[in-house]
Length: 115
Image (cartoon, rainbow, N blue to C red; front, side, top):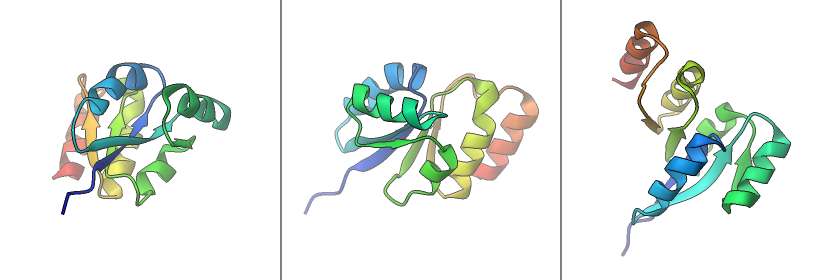
C-alpha cells in the first residue's frame, strides 16, 4: 500500500511558480495541485501555463481546501504574513522562504502561530 502524495498549492505565478514549482515537481511523493494569484483570470492562466490542475484567486480559500496539504508562499515578504497565517489557521504545512517576513514583529507572530 503506497502513501498518497503530499499535495502542494503555490501562491504566486511569478517567483513561486518559476523557482519553487520545478523543485516541488522534482520530489517523489509530492504533487503540485494548485496555484493562486490575486485575480481569477491570472490564476486560470497560470494553471494552464504551468500545467497545474486547480486555480485559486483567493489564498484563504486555497488554504482552507481539504485537498491541499502544503501551502507554498512564494510571494514577496511584505505580502506573506496574511497568507502564512491563513495556512496555519487551516492547519496546513507551510513553506515560507527567505526572507521569512517583512519585519521582526511579523516573523515573531508567524513563529508563535506555527508553534
